[in-house]
Length: 374
Ligand code: FAD
Ligand code: UDP
Image (cartoon, rainbow, N blue to C red; front, top):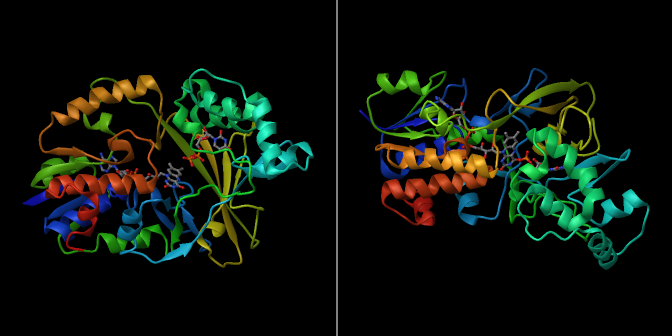
């Protein structure tokens, strides 16, 4: 008899398996319908030997010391500060919009206070910052909004920014200085030997049994267990009883080039009519030295693997119905980006999983949960 059947071997499932086994001596089965662990953060060497992320570029960043220290038990790190350029008006310019973006685009030589004044003169006052359009238009005005955000967002989400929660585009700040980093978190680093190696070390424990190519429905009756932790889509767990929660999907198009370097930045965003949103060259992220290089195009689509919950009020309302049902379902706990329908980064999923572990183990403080029996 296993104590827990954990469904999904991504960040949420692996952290919970590790904590329950190593921290509390529980017996755990970790199953995933895919043929590998790591969930969407899975990486592997492609046919040319280049380390790539199968489900799109993953860059680790967090301001949480406990999350960083927790993961540091399973990996060494390679310091990496992520930088992105956007292809706008025939030029590659920094995104987030900063001083250099404005000067490059408009052929100016403004100082930081002048950039602030420039943006303030264009910003449109909005009574309420409710949508993803409000956030940007109220900071930079309509023209820059249209150049950088409107088309990218319409492609990425299949919705106009005015139909999405403010939090979506608010992920990307606007700066008047020259800082061109995509993130400003305290800890920014990539697992030195890749994400998959980190996950392997995390779940390498005699109390954890891993079953791949194994769906929840198959395992539910085959594996004797006391409780379930479900990290797949919460609406699927309940057979879409209240209707389907919308998720946005992506198609990944990989290309290997017979050259060491392909593009001038780790990621180039295309906020225009191209079918893809961004192109990533993995070697910048991983630091790998290799005579060839592999890039990936991300092409958003409505159907397919559920990658992004879609943050907007009607979806939050539908999710709340599932959340209520989840609370009333004894012996089943939900976690992760799909299990709790939240547009979470990796570090937020780790923090959420540590919190859930704390509750299950009776150690309510997350820091203690991460530390207990380390
Ligand atoms: P997942 O990784 O999705 O794992 C869930 C697992 O459950 C999957 O492996 C799935 O196969 C399995 N599963 C589902 N249903 C079943 C079932 N019925 N039976 C068995 N198994 C099942 N975050 C960052 O911090 N930085 C980034 O740069 C970043 N970039 C991203 C880029 C893209 C394109 C995407 C899509 C996400 C990105 N993220 C990034 C977010 C990151 O991927 C997630 O926060 C994290 O991987 C979520 O982990 P999870 O365990 O909740 O879910
Ligand atoms: N976004 C945009 N233009 C950009 C970058 C981002 O319009 O050049 C918007 C878009 O709606 C995107 C959101 O901001 O989905 C969040 O961007 P982020 O890079 O954080 O997306 P993720 O890496 O999660 O796909």
